[in-house]
Image (cartoon, one colour):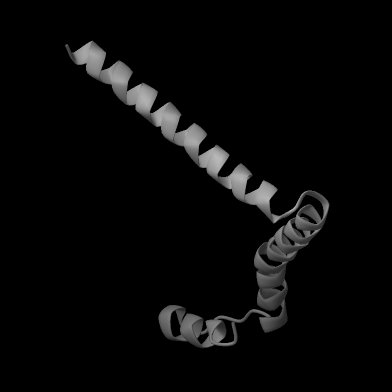
Length: 80
């Protein structure tokens, strides 16, 4: 984060911007969603348990896989 002004000066020449503004943007776009996801997982594990999350993850993966397989089968039928 602190090297962004250095790289910008090397690549773009003499420009000025506030390092704190860049830091705030990084925290806003990366830190807040990361913290919210961690909080959601911790609360969810307490409420539903680790096994529920594990099953949910693989349920969603299986749903995506089955949709892709059905699309693949339909496209193969059309070719024939």
